Image 1 (cartoon, rainbow, N blue to C red):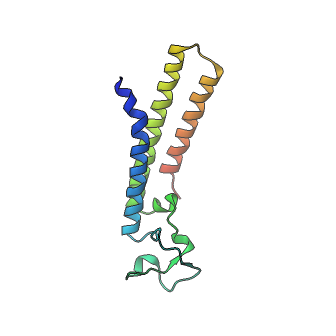
Image 2: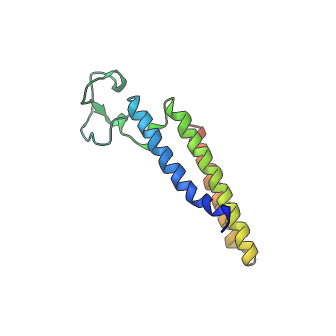
Image 3: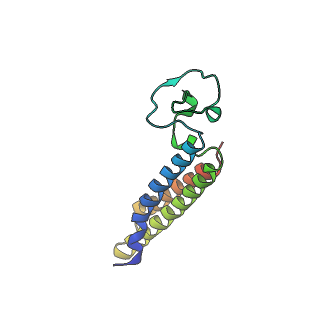
Length: 133
């Protein structure tokens, strides 16, 4: 068994753990509301980060989406790091798959298309992680 077998397993482990860490950081800094708060109001008296107490008044702007959890510092830095690392791992996995198919079979259009598609998806993930609004 090759050491490269660990690479496809490390991708979901890294990204799922990283996304939960980004959510926990955003929740701790009160940049998003908790998942179990299903009562979102249209208007609140004060901003989320100024509130205190066990119940928070949340608007629809504070829904804990992945992209909203990674917009404000310090969690935006970690979100960018997770996206960049994940896209690099995707590029390596796609390249190894491409080389493996060439080694076992002949090169075909579908193999080249999968390499191109995988690298385009990895480039898109880099754009999402590094160029946040």
